[in-house]
Image 1: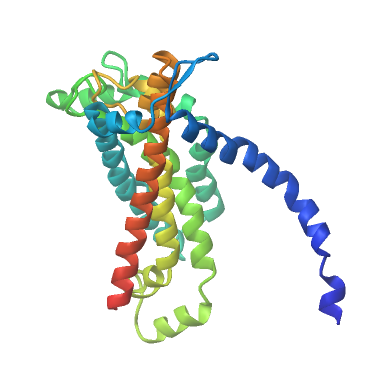
Image 2: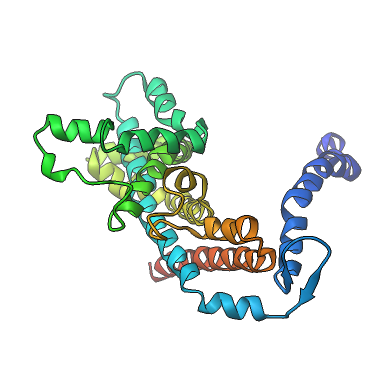
Length: 296
């Protein structure tokens, strides 16, 4: 009886949810449907629209620039999984050590880049990579490693790795906070039993902490895929997709087609393609993770 009395009425719950749902529909659902409709038209803005069916999608399947940008997105995703999730997991293990002091300060410092604008991060790392007065080349010269100095943002062989570093650096703190929250939900009794059995240090992390965080790691992988499939700001500021198309990503390719070349219909088809590929990668990651769990 008490629980029914304290439970809000359905119309009260609906009233609280309505503003957020309306905003979400306005900025996500409606633009998605509009993009889907535009993708079936030859549309360059204005009132003139010519229905062309699946022509944009047939062109998209054969568009090597689109698939090249998808390849760049995949490279960034793989590097981010190792860099963002991997480094965050290692730092999390160190943060749980009893020897580490001032943990809150360390956590806040590592998380600080997350709240910095991606545009600012892009400009900052452009300065770091600068050939003449950049910090990276200065450090290499100071260490006598002049042979390692290269045009970091101008060499097609290394540019995609170079633009991935700021993305990795910025979001390590994001996954660190997620992992710390997951570890805090693990009962202390488990760790106490592990201490009695002699599972300490690396063994404690490998056989207790990480397996119990498997669901959190799964979510982190999906967030990493979704976030890096729509990455745009860092690369737009640092290289603009160059040299040539060597650092072009799909979001930037859609932007160029839609707002620079004014091919809004084809740009909409690219956006739908990004959505389909993103969902496919996320479902594939869940399938692979679930398959391992089923075998266990």
